[in-house]
Amino acid sequence: MTSSSVPSVKLLINGEFVESKTTQWRDVVNPATQQVLARVPFATAAEMDAAVAAAKEAFKTWRKTPIGARARIFLKYQQLIRDNIKELAALLTAEQGKTLPDAEGDVFRGLEVVEHAASIGTLQMGELANNVAGGVDTYTLLQPLGVCAGITPFNFPAMIPLWMFPMAIACGNTFVLKPSEQDPLVTMRLVELALEAGVPKGVLNVIHGGVDAVNLLCDHPDIKAVSFVGSTQVGTHVYNRASQNGKRAQCMMGAKNHAIVLPDANKQQTLNNLLGASFGAAGQRCMALPVVILVGEAQAWLPELIERTKTLKVNAGTEPGTDIGPVISCAALERITGLIVKGVEEGAKLELDGRNPHVPGYQDGNFVGPTIFSGVTAQMTVYREEIFGPVLCVMQAASLQEAIDIINANPNGNGTALFTRSGAAARHFQEEIDVGQVGINVPIPVPVPLFSFSGSRASKLGDLGPYGKQVVTFYTQTKTVTQRWFDEDADGGAVNTTITLK
Image 1 (spheres, one colour):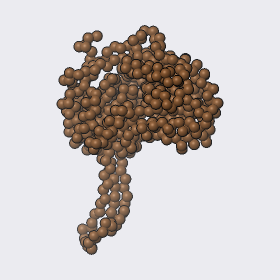
Image 2: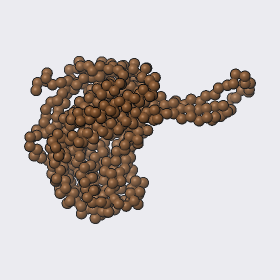
Image 3: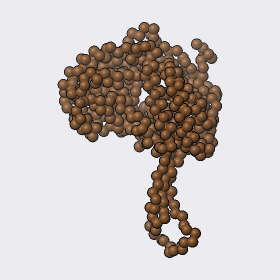
Image 4: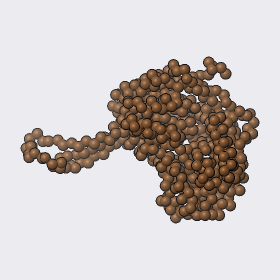
């Protein structure tokens, strides 16, 4: 396919999908076939400025739009997503690689946030206290900030954009979104559906690009808040740069999630959960389980874990029965295989080698099969670095407390899980573990949108997480009003020179 016949991804500026005038483009590539699906532009500075300007202008009227009118847009939007979920999943699989059922899950977890956004009438209510002093009332207003921005990663190109712009817009803000330049197609289709649902022109804008786009969003004086999901390196840069420019920032970053398996756990259920969480989406989840700590007699489960892993099917995400699709790019494949080599060199035992799997019909795909290391220690590179591939590191511990100490010594705090039948062990675990999201017999404890995503420590910068109640606080400014109304006939009384309300 020639470059001229490959469709170009558009920018969205002030309600219009426009062709970029840039000279810098990147191919969107199917990771299972290497087919070029589209070209994505790295927007010019003028185009990015125009997107922010459109959002700033739209804010003047959008902020005054009745809260019920905003809510009804998202009621319509959630229905449009439901009606088009198969199409959205197919787009996602083509450009990102995950299986079709997993792609539907990606869309659905974002849909849940859209449904929550439709409840904005309840979520954005303030508080009132009557007669805090004589004839004085105090109340709070949760008012929108202005123009907000979102920077989203390749691994969840549907869910994570839907974490951001629906809640920001529902709160009365306008938004500039920069999707991942690796797989923006499903994001753009979601944006089209948002406009169809009634999002007015300028309220949602989309730019594309790399580091220059990220820096502009962090620097632009008209942007009030930046939301980011991605790597620790980039997230730290975004948080520091945006904060130094006086913006609110929330950055969800890298992880090294651990599961602890106690010998009293339900063996079959546990093994199935470990495999799904470790190898699903080819390990390309920030909430994946790349580390399992087998405690005591559970260490004897390792051979069965390996044998069950061998049953997982590696293939293109479109093929029925596929468990593990390709990783996102050739560069990702090279990095993952390099880390596997590093694990062997540093003394970990390679129990199952997933390199160079045979995938008939997809010889050019970026495939890595499920890989298992045992005898992993905290000093090894495969433990210290986020592999972001289908590689499971198995560690051992003599007790639950020893396993907890291993996890708490790791700098990351995104998610963790414990598998047990013991309520006492579970309660001890949830009390003592220094990780933001805890699963008890749940391997990927990402909360539903009634609650907020709550990663911690090196996995998160900023005190407020995405979606749920916390994100309403993030995307609004609390204004506190203290008021008194004087009776027209009342005597003025004495002058009060204190700070006491009388």
